[in-house]
Each structure stands twice: as C-alpha cells, then as structure tokens.
Length: 76
Image (tube, rainbow, N blue to C red; front, top):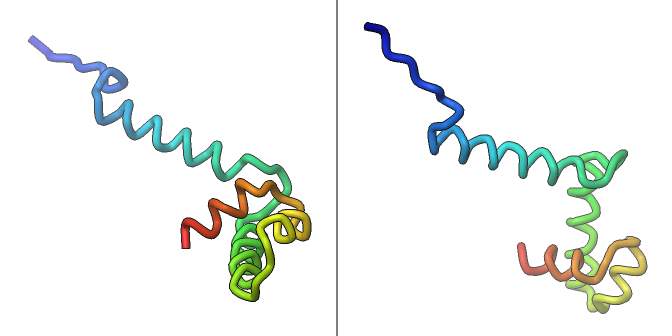
C-alpha cells in the first residue's frame, strides 16, 4: 500500500515559500534599480550621515523617503 504525501501542506515547505516570496518582492520593489545601485546608495547615505547631513537632506539628495534613510542608518 503506497503512502502519498502532499509536500505543499508541510509547514517547512510553506515557511520556505513565504520567505522566498518575501525576498522576491523585496528585490523587485523598484524596477530598474539594480542591487549594486542599492548598495552604493546605502553606502553613500551612511557616509553623508557620518559627515553631518540631516535625514531630510539625505532623503532629498538621494530621492528617497526619510523612513528609508532611517532604516539604512538603523541597519548599520
């Protein structure tokens, strides 16, 4: 008597699928912006912040939201 299992109902499969989907959405948020450009922007935001630029100045200069700048600074 063969035993069949539906792997898509397995908790580990579902967790892995959710993680993969979240990563895919994160990478694809801004079309046309490559990962290298994001890393460069990230590095330059930190550099500007360390030189004394305000959050508003950084957001305006890099054309991002203030929340984005705050997240970059927090993640460092």
